[in-house]
Amino acid sequence: MSANVDILFEPFTVKGMTLPNRVVMAPMTRRKCPGNVPGEDVAAYYRRRAEGGVGLIITEGAFVNHKAANGYDGAPNIYSAEALAGWKHVIEETHAGGAKIIPQLWHVGAHRETGIEPDREVPGCAPSAIATGDRETPVEMSQDDIKDCIAAFAQGAAASQAVGFDGVEVHGAHGYLIDQFFWQRSNQRQDEYGGSFDNRMRFAKEIVEAIRAATGPDFMIVFRFSQWKIDDYETKIAETPEELEHFLKILADAGVDVFHASTRRFWEPEFEGSDLNLAGWSKKLSGKPVITVGSIGLDDPSWAGANSTDVDELVKRMEAGEFDLAAVGRQLLSEPAWANKVREGRYQEIEPYSVKALKELR
Image 1 (cartoon, rainbow, N blue to C red):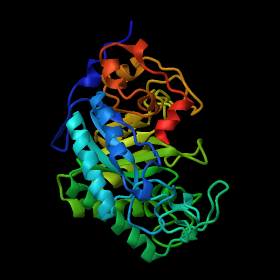
Image 2 (tube, rainbow, N blue to C red; image 1 turned 90 degrees about the vertical axis):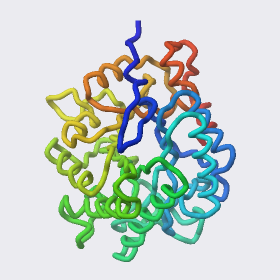
Image 3 (tube, rainbow, N blue to C red; image 1 turned 135 degrees about the horizontal axis):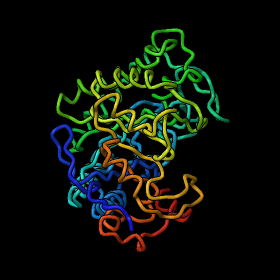
Image 4 (cartoon, helix red, strand yellow; image 1 turned 45 degrees about the vertical axis):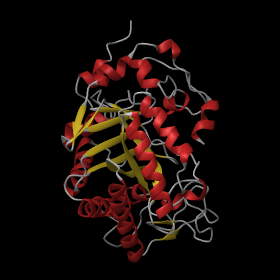
């Protein structure tokens, strides 16, 4: 007998906006936007998930207006007139389906390589000229580059607000540009953006402050962060709860309303001596609403495939107040109606995730 899932489908109010429930669609890159413009198929993709019972959709990463922001052909931007018109239609379709929607503002940093659109001659840039994984070495960002990137995030947020998005998410996780500033291994700068913990936080802090200034006091800002990186699953930005508290306070003071704590397995504890996961610690230490994420609805964190499973552990933790919202990723690729089927107890009808679901993602 599965747990009572009612709490997942209770409304949740944040920043004066009421979400119809606590199920969030996690951001997942699709590379289905020719010319970096979201088209009719993108609008239909998100509407299906809205009609399937999701309360809040966080879009795939949309790259900001900086020459080196994009890392993947077919990814959407969040600044051109054509793309913003496309996003306006996505918003209309998502709202018609019953969900709220926010874009994920993105700059990939060192993950970009020469040859990627829109300007294929532009190399990647990063806090320091240090390659990640087996990629080419990026260009170290100048002070002007940093200022331009901060302005680009603010511009993207203001444009998002103007076309009708319900807020924005800043992608500060997984080893992309903002996270590269956090991480000592990728940030070896000698100026005020490198060195001490506070200096390495400065770039993110100034981005959030610029977004808040550009959008006003009532627009929702979500910040996604992670301990792990694409190239290092074991690393940590914050080794202790005290370091995590300091990290969160800097961002909250800058204007973050909601933290999106990205983990690979939501049920794993973050620090010794407590069962709280990263989202749980983030809520406890910041007092802000928090989204948890990581293999929800699946029994295997790998991308190769996984079996669908119940949400009893998720429900138990949410009922205990560990976190407020739950972001579902891969399970929503194979099963757009996942939320409705969970709410109605129709687990046996949920399409299991498998590699074939990547066709929808990619």
